Image (cartoon, rainbow over all chains, first blue to last red; front, side, top):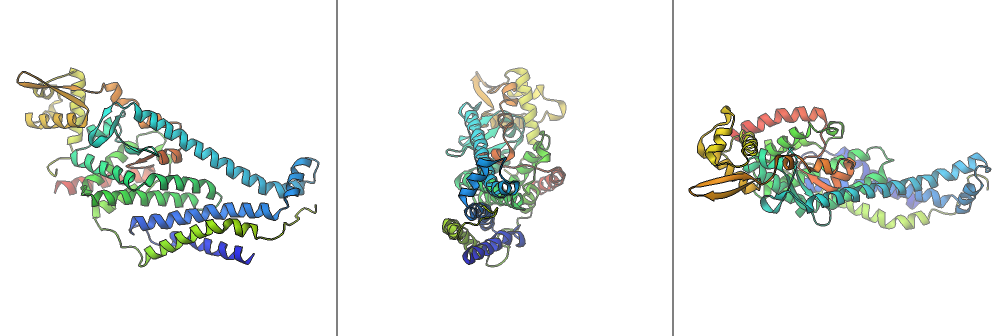
Length: 301
Length: 127
């Protein structure tokens, strides 16, 4: 129990830490690492709690409670069912989320396979009057440019926006997004998980912005392209109701050209430490759960 | 790159609209088909037409001494088969994993702020 309590305490610190630090202007890669580690810890806390509850409850009682329902005493059914149903619900929502992701990925792949034409820098053209530039797909991402983007962006904006999307592909952000989605589903019971995912996405976008600027993209042109894409997005149904990803903050940062590295000192070693902690927690989870002790009889057998 | 004005995107859109109306045309024919306030210099229209051709929205062919521009997409294609339409049924999380976009979702108050920032960016680029 002592080891479990210690792991829980350290995990809590790792979860809370990025919420307390001022990461808005810090190195985006470091901020991504911190938020990703915190998300991983959130998922582990939920999975560990459920697994621990199932271990502490006697498996035989659990099965009996279900087998005898509704004849079994209500408190017995409830006591065991809550933990089991929690696990089942979590697993089902994980499968559901992954199915949605795969469905979206296949839909994108179908669209990319039959493009309207070939665009600049190996991109494919899709329809639509909106300014859409995207790195589409998981295994083999394709640079997608909407016809509206080709008409509405000037040369510098188009080049900067393409550099931004290329940065997403080159830096393999799609896998981080997939990981974030897994953690979001698993860590959903904990408050603040949704915000953590939004923050991770925000810093991923900042990372792509910075990478594009490093590759000599015009920062003002990139800011302008983001504004044009965002202005178009406001007219699309349903977009305004969704959570934001700090688009205005990114434009301000590009406009002011303040550079990176203005976050708290020693942030990178801290981020590495928290990430190491998350990995260690994930590896030790099975042994921590199995070492919780003998099953507890909650409902009097 | 810095001599491009923010109005260029609007001119490109108008030129695409003119080309669709004409089916195909030379620089002068396209220029004549533009609304009066977009009828810039011959060279400006030619530059934008070449730019649109390089991007894949127009095709070029030589007829004698002139180059004829034609749309490579119909207006219907231009407007349809969009990412938005393809992913209409996908949750916002699923679509954000499947596609990393230049911008993600946007709350309305942020959209208003972005409108103001767009003016600042345009002013900064004009310097």
